[in-house]
Each structure stands twice: as C-alpha cells, then as structure tokens.
Length: 331
Image 1: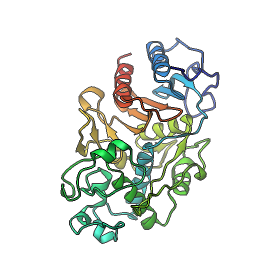
Image 2: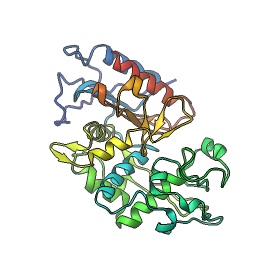
Image 3: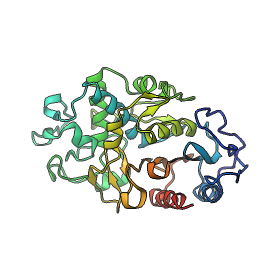
C-alpha cells in the first residue's frame, strides 16, 4: 500500500493555538507532556491509514501535525455535523422550532410521497436520525441502501437508523425556514467568525437524485479549517469570547439522544457520541465515508482531525479511529 508522504508544512499560521515548539511535518518536539507518546501514536496511525492529514491538539497545543493541512477534501458525512451547528444558531434565534412536525412544515417527497404517519416526525426526530421515514435519498452508500428498513416499519421517534433522508430533509428545512443557502450561511455564521483560512461557499455543492426532492450538501474542508471547527465545539461554541454556537446546543448535540447499532457509540444531534465511561462527558465525533473525522474529547482537552485523500473500499475506519482516540487519552 502506498502512503501519503509527510510534508514539511507547519501549523504555525494557526495563531489562535498557543503552540509549544510547534510540531511541524516531519519534525517532533519532546519538550512537553502533550507530545512524546501521542506524537508516536499519531505518526503510526497516519502511516497505517494512508491519510491526507492528521492533526492532534491537547489543550490547544500541538501533539502532531502530519500531511497536507491545506488540501481541500470532500469530508462526506461530516457535512451533517456542520449543518448541525447552523441548526443550533437557528433554533436559538427562534427561526426553527425543533418540535415542529413535517406536516406542519409542509415537507413531502416525490412519489411514493410521505404518509400521514411519516409526516408526524419532528425536526428533532430528524436531527437524531429517528424519523422512521425510509424513502430513497441522495448520497447514500450501497450499505445504507441495502440496510434501509421498509417504509412504515417504525413509528416516528421510535427507532434509530443512519438515514440520509433525514439529513437531506434537514437541509431543505434549513434553507426554507431561514431563507439562507447552507454554504453561504456556514461561511458567514461560522467560518468567518472563527477565522477559517480556506473555506469559501463555493466549496459546497448540492446533489440530487431523481427519486427525491431533498438534496445532499457535500462540503470540502481543509484539515486546518476543520481543526478550528473542532476547537469551537470543544469550547462549547465559544471563540475568543464570542458565543458563535449556543453552548446548550453543543451539549445536547454531543449527548446521546439515541442508542445505535454501532456497539457502544451513541448518536446525538448530527454527531456520534463516545461512551462516557471511557471518554468522559461530551465526547464525540463527526464522521465521513472513507476516513474523514473531527473529534472532540473535553475530559482530555483533545481535538483530532483526520482527512483521507479519496474514499476507499477499506472498512473499519471508525473502529480504528476510536481505538486511536482511546490510546491518545492514555498516552
């Protein structure tokens, strides 16, 4: 297997991070307890996973910075957690009511359209992937298509399924109720306030399939911009004294709202949650197909960003990433 090379680009441009002897690509500093074993673990993970970039920070200090932090990558399903941040803002501003049903919002889909029972699902049900609506959706993986339950098999709010229909319909609802484009909104409300260096609204696009009205909304991000987003979430939505995302929304999003079929992982509001007994409160990650991750572990003050150059058929990305996070916590 070929692996992405270690580049010499450094994260020293991230002035908001109080770096100790910044760990540049291909160079290590052992002068702080946040480095050492964690740096070695990161280097091994970077090589074995064949990543585009891997950044680990503890308490805002660099533990490891490997690969190309300026390479824009389609972060796949990480898009859902990015949209979730916009939902937190819109809900706090009373522009979206999470208790509203799809019937109240006039949300339907192409034939076979939604039944009256399906339209009882609320925005909150969609945010926690419990709508009970198993209509064909854009941007689904083959695995999800194969595992999708039958229409009408579960009542709204009663069953968790990682469901692109829910996530895509949330995009439609956001655009309709706020009157804002998702990517313009993310740029103005989040990327600009936290000083993302690379993101522009043109890094997003809408994807539709003939069977559904509701479009997917893939994002491209660089690792260094993803790191800023992770730092924002770690600090409960605050950035340099400004509350960009309501702290209460961050807490809710990273609290288990639904049990999943993925072992001890839970699901919050558009975030995967990590088991509290092992990782502490509020730990979780955004995950995208092929090995894209943004993870926060507040009890350990960790932010970890991983990007992969191209989606690959190799399985087990999430399992290996969670093991890596656990190992970092004990390094």
